[in-house]
Amino acid sequence: MHNRRVLVLTGAGVSAESGIPTFRGKDGYWRNLDPIKLATAEAFARDPELVWQWYRERRHTIRRAQPNAAHEAIANLAQCADEFLLVTQNVDDLHERAGLAKAEMVQIHGDIFVTKCSRCDFEHEHEQDQNGAPRCTKCGALMRPGVIWFGEPLPARETERVENYLQRDSCGVVIVAGTTATFGYIIDWALRASRRGGELIEINPEETPLSRFATRLVREPAAIALPRLVDELM
Ligand code: NAD
Ligand code: ZN
Image (tube, rainbow, N blue to C red; front, side, top):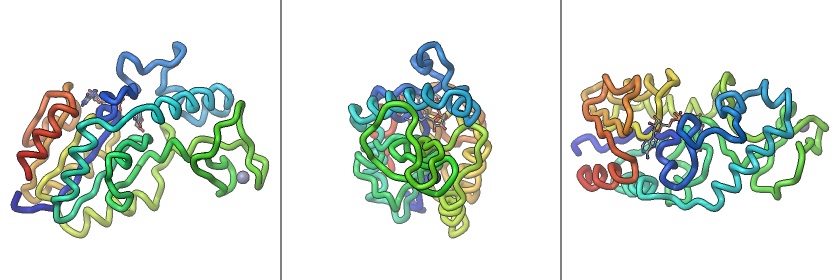
């Protein structure tokens, strides 16, 4: 690598081989319900207990899961890059458990282990799950999972960290792995980071809206493709 400044963007596909279903994959549905509709403020307003039940089961699945070779390869790449940032849409903690420092990563869609108030700014992390829908001990409103639902704005502080990284300099290598890239900002960040002739590498068994911009396409599962790619880059 000449320019050893790196940006990696990941989505649910990177955790698929750890046994955590993607939303749009064949195991995505939960009790015949579509995750795209469940992960919304509307679903929560209609039936908070149901949405909480789904999140508790997902927390349980994630706690039992282990990081896979893709998470490990990304943590290794961070070690040898001059500057490194991971922007993940994943709400699980597998990048962190693979050894990536929090300072080198932005969880742009939040953290499933955070529980936050739907009205005030009270929140807490990694507390024992209770049954039903918990209430805020400060203001009494419903507590909700600390994730960004479909249709909600991105957290300003996290977006700013990405913008700062992009504004400081361009990247020699941009890797986009395991995401449908349906959100415009993912494509925008990938293109802006690679704008000065950086490599734009997509890792995904399927075609995505980003594919036509990529300088390299790897149509393989992330846990196979990423270790090989990182070896090559190092
Ligand atoms: P998605 O479910 O929409 O798409 C997953 C993508 O991964 C697809 O493009 C698919 O082709 C690809 N894929 C599947 N298996 C793969 C593999 N083994 N290797 C590489 N790629 C593979 O996920 P998304 O685009 O990330 O976005 C959906 C939203 O769902 C996000 O906002 C995210 O917050 C949330 N989500 C998070 C998790 C998690 O934290 N693990 C899991 C499911 C959904
Ligand atoms: Zn509150």
